[in-house]
Length: 238
Ligand code: APR
Image (tube, rainbow, N blue to C red; front, side, top):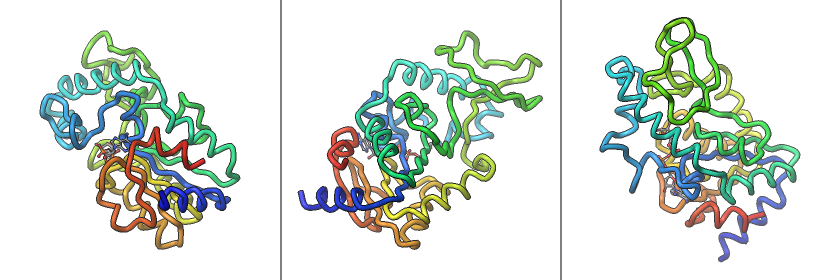
């Protein structure tokens, strides 16, 4: 496969590399993606549940969804694609991992620094006092969970319409625009600002390699589109 060889050569030659991952990298670990086949929960779209408005309207419903996801993720293990990125990080002096995933599988695989654009499903934040803490219980004993102060707790993730963690997008843009190669793995590339990192990197001259089982919103504007499961393709690129 000529495309695979081309991608391998670009990666081998690069000293600076950035990676953007999405839900598809965890699909082979058994975690459903948000969009596409099997990506929905009780017929709700992520845009209907992952919003401050949905939480204000029905915190219990939103927490039921997160509780379900926490249970699935707790049972899952990192796959060959997560592990390949750990190996790549060891080989490249300039390496930045940017993820939209909140599942923590990159951490569990052993990746070092991770820019978690959309937060972390294992963190909680109090809607009253602002305290934030880690809670790895799955399932949670009582829904919705509360803070020690008595306030309602929310998941420590970024919802639609909310800003990304302070300064993180700037750091991600810097990494994407200074990388020679950018790998875009398992994302439908429709959620912004994360998806805007792809044109941002391309404009700055990076070679963009996409790994996805399907064509995406970004496919027409990448330098190399590899079709197949990340857990199979990524190890072949190293
Ligand atoms: N290998 C590679 N890609 C895969 C695989 C696989 N094994 N399985 C599925 N995919 C691809 C799908 O083809 C799809 O393009 O992964 C992508 C998953 O897309 P989404 O479900 O839209 O996930 P993502 O792009 O991460 O969503 C972005 O949306 O709901 C929000 O905050 C949530 O971070 C998430 C954001």
